[in-house]
Length: 95
Image 1 (cartoon, helix red, strand yellow):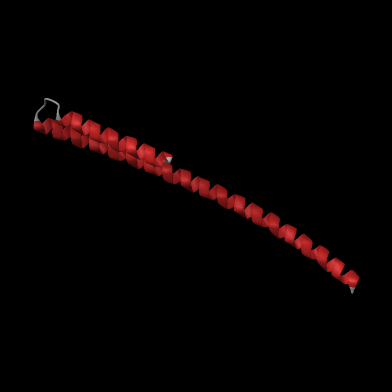
Image 2: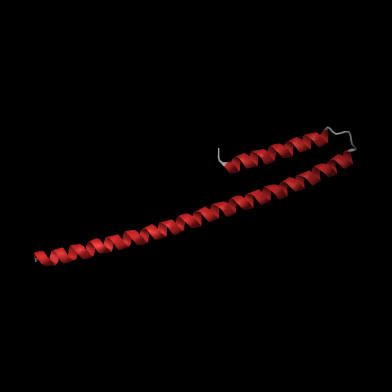
């Protein structure tokens, strides 16, 4: 299980636990509903922050891999060019 699923599971579990705790609390219904709404907003903001962190992390990893691929392609191109140049010199000697 990857870390984003673990974080999401923890956040959802915490939200459900907090909601159940408020529902069973001995307070007026209007107070409980207000508290549930506030907690829901807090958790939604927290999940939005976690989602943004996940997107940033994925973007950063993608950019890193893209740079590595570009570097590797440049090295392989130079190697191929060198081999072709060597083969052309050898071919001219045979002729």
